[in-house]
Image 1 (cartoon, one colour):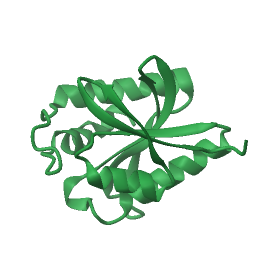
Image 2 (cartoon, rainbow, N blue to C red; image 1 turned 60 degrees about the horizontal axis):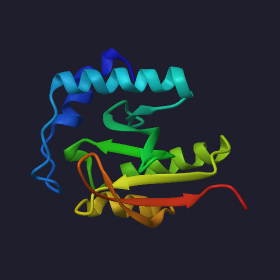
Image 3 (cartoon, rainbow, N blue to C red; image 1 turned 90 degrees about the vertical axis):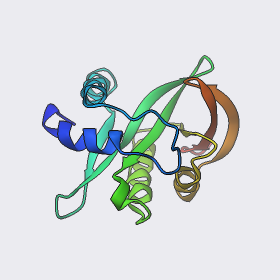
Image 4 (cartoon, one colour; image 1 turned 180 degrees about the vertical axis):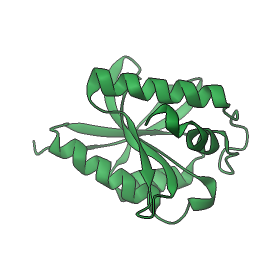
Length: 154
């Protein structure tokens, strides 16, 4: 993800979300900050969210890994955003499964997805990639569900 992705990231992050109609719509400035945050993640951790495109180079959204603090405990999360008109085609699941596999290959022990209770499509993506509900938490000012799975044999 680079500043050249600003228009696409603004489009995906600012789109109204039919699953969460009361969510604050993000701005172009929010997208700039999103890109900068991911670039810091790449520099500090070697990963972040990456741009997702079709084989025909059509922008889909983003997907990748980020560090998340959950009630004082650090977790590595798989996150994903897909353009509104491209949802319900399995693209988030395909991207998230690839990220899960990359996390496993990198030796990450446990992977989570933090999802709002009303976001059933995102919960289905998490379940399809093998994550299951572990905790109900409070994150970023609201209730959330923490889905997770061990990636390494114990």
